Structures are given as structure tokens and as C-alpha cells.
Amino acid sequence: MKQALHLGLLPSLVALIAFLAVAYPSDAQTFNPTLDVTLDDTTPEVASGFTVDFALPKDNVQFAGLVQFIPRDWGIVRGDQIEIGTDVGNLEAAATLGLIGGACNSDLPVVFEFKNASLDTGDTVSFDDADDNGTADFAEDKDDNGLIDAVDKYPSFLNSVFEDLQPLKRTAGMTIVAGIPVLLQFLIFEPGTEISDEIPSDAELGFPTVTILQNIGDDDAVPQPGAITDFCAPLTTINVTFGTSPDGQQLFVNPQDGTYTYTTIALGQRDADGDGFENSLDTCPFTVNVGDPKVANSGDLDSDGLDAACDPNDDLATGGTDSDEDADGYLNRQDNCPLVANGQAEDNQADEDLDQIGDACDPNPTVADGELSSARLESVITIGDGTGPGGPPSAEACPDCFVVGEDGTVRPDGDDDSNTGVIIAIIIAVVVAVAVIGGGAAMMMRRREV
Ligand SMILES: [Ca+2]
Ligand SMILES: [Ca+2]
Ligand SMILES: [Ca+2]
Ligand SMILES: [Ca+2]
Image 1 (cartoon, rainbow, N blue to C red):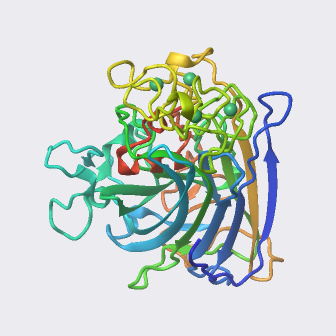
Image 2 (cartoon, helix red, strand yellow):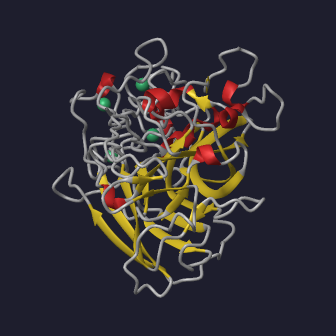
């Protein structure tokens, strides 16, 4: 991270429990992300911003999915109570990419400024360039009001990913990388909403906040070859959420005096051969690598991106160098079957079991190879002196807050069915979708798990 933000006024306790699933009996992948949450103001029942610092060390496998839970007693002003386009926060990230078949070691700093965005699921905008004018529709400003259309309108792919479930709040930001618009969104749902089989849906965890980068989960997305051929750890993100809008409107309001736990569930990508390199990064997913794909020319004598462990001709002297070994249009490092042609003329990187090993070379095409790692991270937040019984802010403290009472009833609606929402869609490799920047990383586009 280029810049550290120090908004916190209280010490945060970070508890980290990582469950490492074993793919092969020897050694499993490393997946130990870190989380730290700090508040601007820990006074009970006042509006306060917060900062979530989230990172993945270099030797870890990349994220496969990420859901954060804002404690259930927090006062959240619903998105439909806030003017569309209001500034609500920002995010700074430092990602690591592999470019044009090279080692995965290029740093990419990105910044997003977030706006409160439309929740009208019936008034949608395409993620694609549906009007064929050269710019993706979501990134345009057709009504010339200074807001991209992904803020004014609801991206249509969200309706298929979340099966028309209504979020309480949506924030959206866009940044341009290499001429390509990159969209990052956070969707906040009611406590108890089921996100996926791998993510607990206990209402006590709080409001699930789902990170959506680009159009991950969109079944209609079509892979294509591109310049960004890998996306790997390390990754750092600092996400600032405002407590009040620039004109003073409440956005997030602290609960009553007490202690609260901010929980994040993160999933790590599969590593079929347990050599520490996730399938999406590993050009030899079933053979322990000779080198390290994050180090230039490591274990790759002919520098073609194929590790010597499975390169059929890793020899410069005999002309082995071939950055697209199977000549299917996808560079070896981007190809989910680098030795079997599965380009746009064939099944175009099809991967039925979503394990990032293409059907064309997957010995178990319907059973994912390797296990998802799971990490549950908790950051304890103290409000006031922390000795109170806790509870949501009063109606007086936050008239517009969506809060869940002890008996499950909600304010201001007063209904009691807040915990019954079900999402079937998922988020595998949400973060990985950043690799579509530059038009690439086809294999990373097909990672929806149902
Ligand atoms: Ca390997
Ligand atoms: Ca090679
Ligand atoms: Ca191939
Ligand atoms: Ca597969």
C-alpha cells in the first residue's frame, strides 16, 4: 500500500482463524489474510465512519471470495434514504498482476471513489457495450448528470447473480486502468441472508457485505485473451466508509455502549497439487512446480511461462520457447489448459466445475480439484466504554437506520421476515475479476458457483 490511513481511535483486536483444507496429503496452500477495522468515533449512537484494512501476504493463494459482516446492531441508513450520487467512501488497493505471460509480480495501485447507487432493480444498465458505441454502457453518463450509469441505474447482471434479491444498500465506484473501466461495488444485505454454501448465513453475524469486482458471476460473460495473464497475492486494500455524507446526512450510526465483532469470511483458491500455487496461477496444476510463477524465469529455462515440471520442451537450445504452446490464442499463463487447445475456436476456456482447470484438460471435469481454503477473521470493536449491554441505536439517534431488534423485527419497516432472504448466487473469485482489466484473464471470468 502506498499510503497508510490512520483514522482509528481505538485498538482493534484481530483474531485470525484459518482453516486450511488439504488437497494432497503433503502440504496445503497457505491462506492467511489479515483484517483490521477501526472507527473514527467510538461514542455510542453517533454517526461514525470506519476503515477496513484487509491484506493477503505474498506467499498466499489468491482470494476466491470475500464477504464481510457489519455487526447486526449497527445503524445502517438504507440506500434509498440517501441521494443517488452522494459520496460515501473510497478504497485504495495494491494488486499484483502478471502481464503478457510474465511472472506475477507487477504492482497495480488502484483507487475507487464510492457513490451511493440506485437500488431500483427494474431500471438497469448493461455491463457490456450493448449500444456498440465503444464504451461499456455502465461506464457512460448518458443523462449527463456527472454520474456513471452504474450509479444511476442498477447493473443488470446483479439481478442474475443475486436472483433479484433486493440489497439494502449499494455503493459503486469506477476507475480506469489501461483504458478499461473497472467497476467495484459493495452490496449490503439484511442479516441472515444466505450468500453461498461456503459462507455462514447466521443472522447474528450481522449485515453481509458482498464485494463485486467487474461482472463476476455473470453467466453471459465471454472470456477473451488479454494482456493481464495472472492476478495473485500479495493484495492490500484499505476501504474507508464515511459515517456522514459531505452535507452532513447520517450514513452509519454506532450502536449502544458495548463490544461488537466485525467478521470477515474469506475463501482461498484451490491448489490441486498442494505446491502452494493456486490452479489459476499454476501452469502445471497437477505437478509440483520446479520454479515460482511469481519470480521471473524461475523454473522456466525457455521463459515461455510454462514451468519445467510440465513443459514438453523447456529447452532454449531446441527452440522450445512457445508462449502459447497449444496455439489456441491464450498465452500459457492465461490458459486454463496450456497444453490443450481450448481457445475461442473451441470451447473457449470452458470450466464446468469452476476449479480453474479447463474441461479440455481436467481429469475430473465435474469435481473441483483441490479444496477451497476458508479463513474467518474477526475484529472486536468497543463502543463507549464497552461495558454496556449493547443494542442498536435508538430511533431518536438514527431515524432512518435499518436496525434489527432482539425479536428479529426491523425498523423502520416493522416486519419480521428480515432473515428469510436467500441468495443462491456466488462470488467465487470475486476479487480475481480485476484481471479482466486490460481485456484479459478469460479463465477468471467463469467462476460462479451455484
Ligand atoms: Ca504445480
Ligand atoms: Ca518453459
Ligand atoms: Ca489451451
Ligand atoms: Ca475444471
